[in-house]
Image (tube, rainbow, N blue to C red; front, top):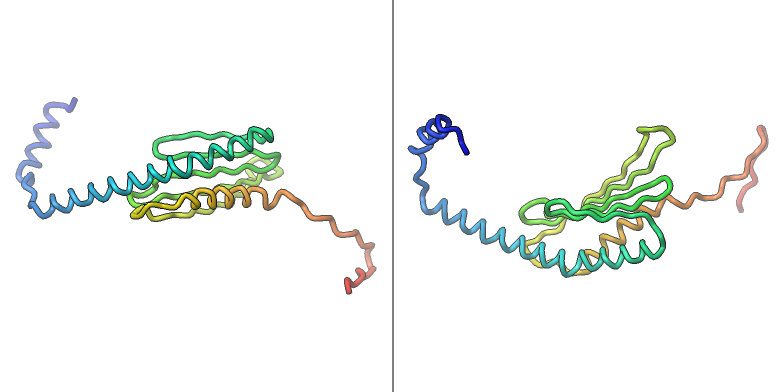
Length: 170
């Protein structure tokens, strides 16, 4: 409950400005109607595409004993995968009133504490129209691809003694 003296002070300041022109209210009603469309498009995309795709991926990860975690907070879904020296997180959320954002965070752990290097990408899609389900699969594959890209280390080049010239590869 508001403090009585604060409420009286606040109402005294606001009362002279309480009348709002109908045009301004009409714009507010239109904005609320559009927001409901955006929310509906996000919910449809989330339930029809994102959640089934994440569920399929979680089954593959669990079957292959890859350490992962899926969590939700507010309007966002997070998928985190842990590997030996790398981990990645994909966050899917309705970040603005009219869009859905896929944030990809890939962290490579350094040799010393605090020397982590992060690679972040963000992809944003407009919710004014319904999103096709294939967007969810594309984003998951992009995330998984980025997570795995640097895991395979190439062969070490042959060590050349000092003063010798490496053989040409013709």
